Length: 397
Image (cartoon, rainbow, N blue to C red; front, side):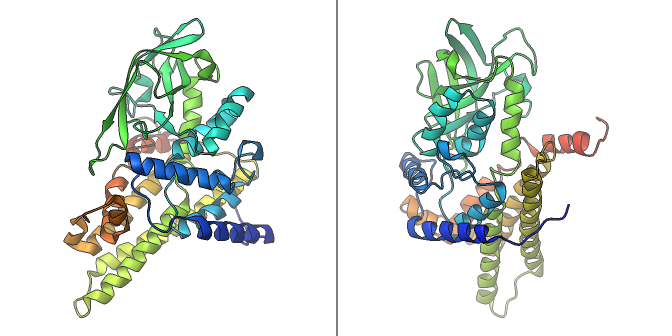
């Protein structure tokens, strides 16, 4: 498929508007980690500031706080967003995953109730999928939501729930037919995380911060009005959410292009600092490959966005995206850690903001986070099975 890589006058005007607003409004100092209470609230305020400029989610319809832009325009905005090292989006589960799902499957009342507050940063959302015995095999989940009049009574145990420690709401998959098995009898339900009968326990990451949580449900009552779609349709709705997660929007190419640019800058600084002692040429080759891969991912994303705008669709190939960007992220950070050497592990002391501003700390934090990439949003081993069967048409092993 041929694509026209020339920007229109409208594209250039949008870029100029986004650049001017971001340069005037992006915090001058890095925000504390959003895996801390202080950092989470700082990022919540940033989400509200984005909303004030109508940049919170530019592809959303205007009536829900967006600008009604298409995917090419979204890519342009993302390039400007990452160009100025704007804060990572703490509400990405809501903005990029739940919001688009609700627009497709929610009732008008649900859209009016949830989407404006989500766009404004008033409600932060957590993803509540996995269970101790149902991670990559999500269809094995056991947490039940049994209907009792106008409520569901939820019992069970969820784990690895992103942002659940500090968020306000969760969206998850529950077994509303206790006698059902596998993909059948599942429903997509949202609920306030402070609902009576819901107990949240943070899970420390490698850096000690609780970016994930396990959630225990003990006769928690959730209104039937908070069911998204029809009862028993949860699996197909959840797969739509997973498509958003693995497809274009959760990880825009600009994020990886900016990391690749920082990696090239790091390589140049380290090369200059070495003087007569040259850096291992293999590292130069690794940096070059990372830069090329980031550019290739960006071009492929522009091609996919053009196809979607023209009425096409993205299906199982979303798994290709997920494998590529997650492994690219690991490769870029491994190259950076190799360039920095042992000092990359020397963490800065003091405030969260001071650590975030330190180059070595920033790369180390990114490296630790990148290691999770091949696991979250569907483990890459599972994604390769999907690619083999549904994209390449290979027989099941």
